[in-house]
Length: 267
Image 1 (cartoon, rainbow, N blue to C red):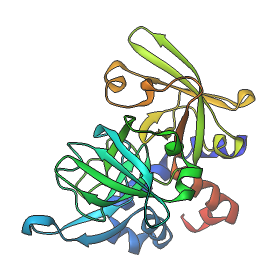
Image 2: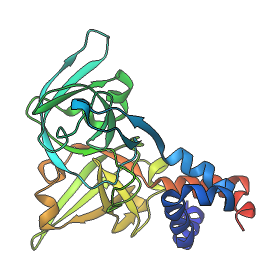
Image 3: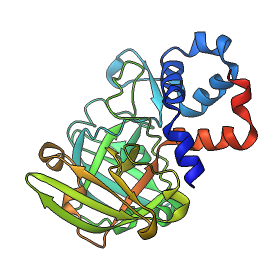
Image 4: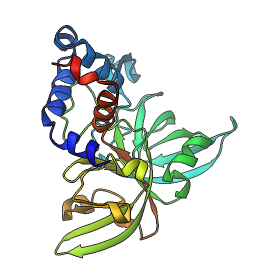
């Protein structure tokens, strides 16, 4: 655990290289073919038709920034005729240009829009999704974080978030300091090894900076400023409730490259 953390912390150039490769994939394919394959895993582009005859745009599917666009409200949640579950969410911002099949992150979970109207949309939930995420705790009236998948022109205000929840954590402490809120979360060692001080983590789909890692307690903490507290669902949750966690994908790639000796081919 310590070796991976130390390696990840002292290789900021790797993070910068991946960001540049995402922005300029064509030129990087020729210069760094190994990195090209990594970027293809991070993003999957595809042309999508739009409603009302507008020109189609190219949307990066299942890639988000962790900058929550709005908080929606769960209106209905129940079994679907297909054997899974449907969840209908009222919203304003994310339904502005929504299309069938679009990806929307709901509390950090990438879900597919199956129907929509002017002020709400419906997504399908597989039983496995409910088992692996905190979405099973939702009920009618619950607030949820919402973010649409990024466009190639989107500013990367947060970090690479895939919407593929790695696991859940439990809020074990909340403490107010001035107008800020400290939140402490407990999770398992399989996720904690990727969490580093000053590193990125997505908590319920919100891109946050880890302040400290408590290995002996299997916990980490972060701080929410006053503005963020008004825009995301985390402050609404109580001690003992679960949050979805997605660790920084770059840490996983570093671990994989180190384990197979891949860094020898990046020089």
